[in-house]
Image 1 (cartoon, rainbow, N blue to C red):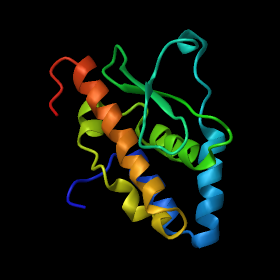
Image 2 (cartoon, rainbow, N blue to C red; image 1 turned 90 degrees about the vertical axis):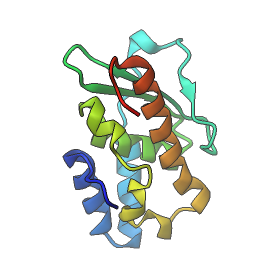
Image 3 (cartoon, helix red, strand yellow; image 1 turned 90 degrees about the horizontal axis):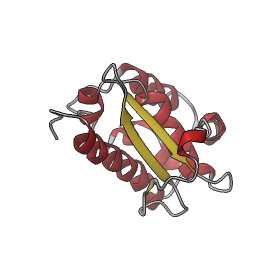
Image 4 (cartoon, rainbow, N blue to C red; image 1 turned 60 degrees about the vertical axis):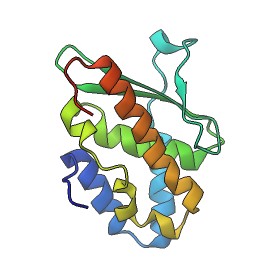
Length: 146
């Protein structure tokens, strides 16, 4: 990867890379369980669906008053892989600058070793989630470059 990851996301990638195969699945489940619930203010609003995910996953990216990215996800508990990917992206990018998120390579998850334990189709969903976030940020953040 020729672009540096935001520090929070790099720490997560490194954490996964240091785990063995079985531990990676457990860690993915931890991130699924750690995904914050959708705030009440967004309940009932239509979030963007990430159609590339095999199960329903919805995302909304916002930029707060300080110019920091805020990420919100809705994913069913019955979809631990997709919810885990959302949890990883939330933990690694929520609170980052718009520029840092936009510069995050879509293939960042390839360095995590998850391709050994989940299908290629599921691995592609991480890039799709990130692509939706980036597009929303470009639409919502004045002056954001794609």
